[in-house]
Amino acid sequence: MGQTMAGKLLVFEGVEGCGKSTQLKQLHGALEQSDRLQQLQRQGLIPQVLVTREPGGTELGLGLRQLLLGYHGGAPMASRAELLLYAADRAQHVEELIKPALARGYWVLCDRYTDSTVAYQGYGRGLDLALIDQLNQVATGGLEPDLTLWLKLDAATGLARTRQRGAADRMEQADLAFHQRVQQGFETLAAQHPDRIVAIDAAADVGAVAADIFTVIDRYLQQWYAPSLMA
Image (cartoon, rainbow, N blue to C red; front, side, top):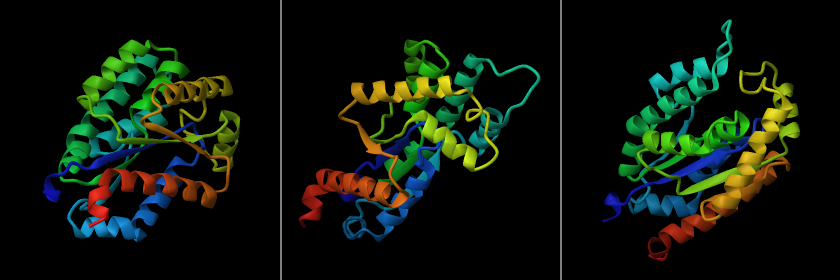
C-alpha cells in the first residue's frame, strides 16, 4: 500500500536574496538525517527526496534559464515573451520530472514554482493575473504544491544580499520598485492561500532560518504520515 502513495511537492519561494537555494540545500541535508524520514523510507513511503529548480530543472529548461536570466539582446525581452518562456520551462519540468517523481512517491523540493510567476510577471511586470493563472494551469496540468515555504524578506535587504554575491542576473538587475512589487505579490499570495503557504522570517541568520523550516516540515511530516509514524 505504501509504495502506491503519491509523493509531496514542497516549494521554496521569495524575493531575490531571500536564501531559497541555500535553505533548500539545508533542508535536504536535514531530511537525510531525520529519524522520522528514515522510518518512513524503511516502510517504502518516501523512496527519495529530489531537489530541482525553476527555471532549469530539465535539459530543455537549462536552455530556457540561460535565455531568461542571461539574455542581453539589443531589444529588451517583452514581458509576455518572458511569461511564455517561464510557462514553457514549467510545462517541460512538470511533465518530465515532477509528476513522474511524485507518482513514485518521492518528495520533490523545488526552488520556485507558480507563485513566482504570479509575483514576478503579474505583480512585478503588471501582466494580467487571470491570464497568468490560465497559463499556470496549462503548464502544470493543475498540479499544486502540497506546501510552499515563503522566505519572507524585505526586497531592499534581499537585493543588497545579491549585490554582495557579485554579478547580477537579468531579474536581479531590475530596479527596486519592481522587486517591491514582487514582494507585495508574495504578501498577497500568502494572504490568499494560508492553507498552503507558510511564511518563514528570512531576515535571521542561516542556521535560525533552517531550524524554523525544519520545525515546520517536521510538523507536516507528522500530519501527513501520522499512522505510519506511530507504527
